[in-house]
Image (tube, rainbow, N blue to C red; front, side, top):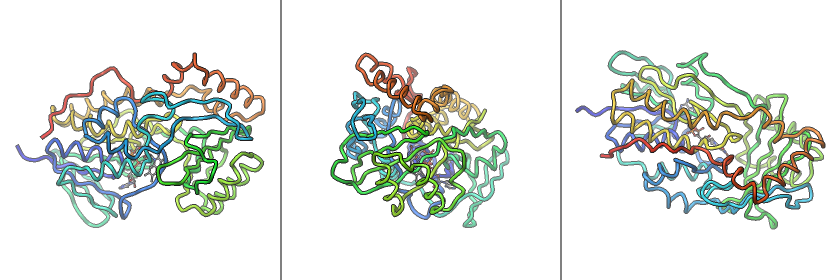
Length: 393
Ligand SMILES: Cc1cc2nc3c(=O)[nH]c(=O)nc-3n(C[C@H](O)[C@H](O)[C@H](O)COP(=O)(O)OP(=O)(O)OC[C@H]3O[C@@H](n4cnc5c(N)ncnc54)[C@H](O)[C@@H]3O)c2cc1C
């Protein structure tokens, strides 16, 4: 049998998982990554549900555990920093998961454990895709023309190749929330828990410990305008205005963001498509189904997708295999994307009255009898179905 060749666009969790598993099942694999080098950075992601089983089959559980962010639980705090309620880690799928890791550490772990023979072309991206009955021809910005049996597009939520090939079938569901992420200096008093402060006016401040001696901060808020279109200074000055008078650690975070190297702003947008493949092209990870941090589980789904794709392709020809891949992944994705309508206004109360209601609900949810309810909410990528069987070479 001739060796099949896959081109994978995007070298983060979905792309690297697909590279890992396709190579392990005998494919020739070329990965293209737009960034000039491996993209480090990002904040907490976690491995949950069936993602843990995929990680174990990769032999990477201990490597990921060794990079645990050190977070021991989650607390809701008030403006004075007093704890209003606590969600301890509580098992593998607690609010702080057992396998909690920074995105960059996670992606690098997969990268460093790729089987021999995976080629990664950094600083390159796809400019043209043409297909005939026997191959897909991928032309890149650097002038390469790669002929492959399959193109896997794993370029994240703003994937340009997906937009080019799937066009108006891509539905973007804007959740009306912006998040500003950044790494700030750790100070005395930063503890080992995720501290979560909600203020009226639809604003939240998050501080989380990491395993690099710094603190990961997020300012998130319900938004009217799109700050991602502004330059950094303009966008941050609007964030300063939006968080004026919020209290707690907001002034410290705002000051630190002014000089932090890795600040980025994102609008939470779900990606939905009726179908994730077309001919010899398939989508994986956020490019196919971004679930946003509001749904959670994006990293687990990205990890699982690489395994399920390779397992499906190992037992069937292309079209039925890509259909089987979709059929296996879709229930997991739909489960996380199906956010109830009240969740955004509940999480981001605008009025003092709404905030009061939220505080009462937090108290109830963090009480012992409600632990099973919280466990259900934080459980993602969970399924009773066994993973498809995969024979590695
Ligand atoms: C730098 C970074 C920081 C992140 N931080 C967080 C975070 O703090 N919290 C959180 O919940 N999620 C974060 N995410 C998103 C998180 O990684 C994903 O939700 C999830 O893990 C799914 O991963 P993915 O591989 O599908 O997509 P992504 O992790 O978004 O990776 C997409 C990859 O494709 C590359 N790419 C994009 N366009 C092209 C192109 N045209 N050609 C070639 N390559 C391309 C990107 O450079 C990136 O390496 C971050 C992603 C990145 C890239």
